[in-house]
Length: 316
Image (cartoon, rainbow, N blue to C red; front, side):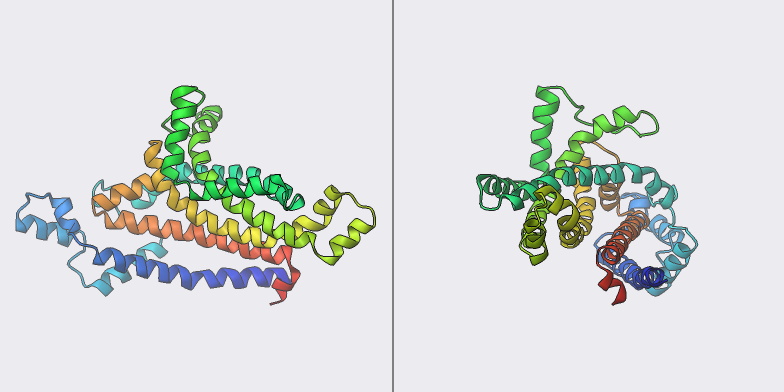
């Protein structure tokens, strides 16, 4: 019962944050230069046509009224229609979301597969050449911009070796093998930064745990290093790492904007870029809202994992 109360409390905390995000995004988009009515009516349209477009889009209403209408529509699941295509915003976002989510989750998996063993080995061999080699590589990974990593991967593994295609996306339902094949390079592009950041935190957290008294006691009892780490170390070292993973999701969602352009993947990032260029306010608001919901859900999962890993958090 205590855990359910903890979950309900965390869910309620997300609601006002979501409302603030929607308000700030709406205001920032309203303050950006340009007139969406001109985009819809055309640059050479007459003032009468532009005024008619502004009225049809609801832009002639006061700002508070437009925001109130927007919130009311969102509550009912209506994110409006795109200024440029006339297609419902939610329908367009849902069609593009699998691309960006596949890219984000793929990058997380790649990052964790690299970071967890690398961080553990570096912590166990603290001060050794392996530890120094790991620190050097993480520094390089964190300093490497995503567009540079992506272009190098395309040059080596696509154009030179021909192992993976350079561009495009195939839905998982159409061809799971081709889906994975086309996801390797873009996911690795994003995963390099994730692996570098998480490796450092795994190493630091595990080093701290391995110096605790109960770890020394377990070793004194004759337990092997693998047993000490598996039974006593990992769970206690996981809390700060989970925090970093939650932050990495935000970074990955932002990074998809660049990576999707490099690998010609029509996901949320590409959609956002086009919406900015066309001043498509409903689409931009919809993308911002959906992205905020994803981040809030990830933060909620991070909070729930705190409650699982540390019972004292549930009691707080």
